[in-house]
Structures are given as structure tokens and as C-alpha cells.
Length: 70
Image (tube, rainbow, N blue to C red; front, side, top):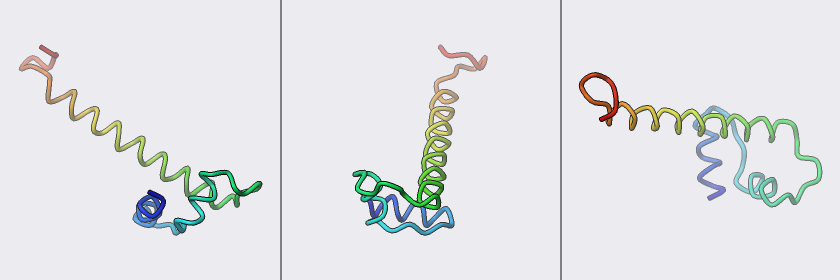
């Protein structure tokens, strides 16, 4: 899971290793670097946007010819 998230963060143009993400997730560091927090925040925001896009597609697919749900 951590390597997958690391890969997705890399696709966003940043670099954060899987071990760093694991350490952050398990709260093994008392003071994570600001950069680490920002990269994870960027990834979370991107995931939220992707989720919103999927919801919009699902909602538009279930709309009837008048644009309302049937």
C-alpha cells in the first residue's frame, strides 16, 4: 500500500518514499517534515478530486433524457 501511494505521489511530480509514508501513517515520527505533510496533503486532495469526478460520472450516467434521475 505504501509503495502504491508513493508511486501516485511521484505521478503528481513529487517524491516521497514508501518508508516515509509508512512512518507517517503509523505515527512513528513525532515531527514529520513540512514537506512530507504537504506531499501527503497533495495526494489526499487529488484522491478527493478523483472521487468527485467518479461521482459526477455516475450521477450523469443515471440521469434520464430530461437531465433528471429516473
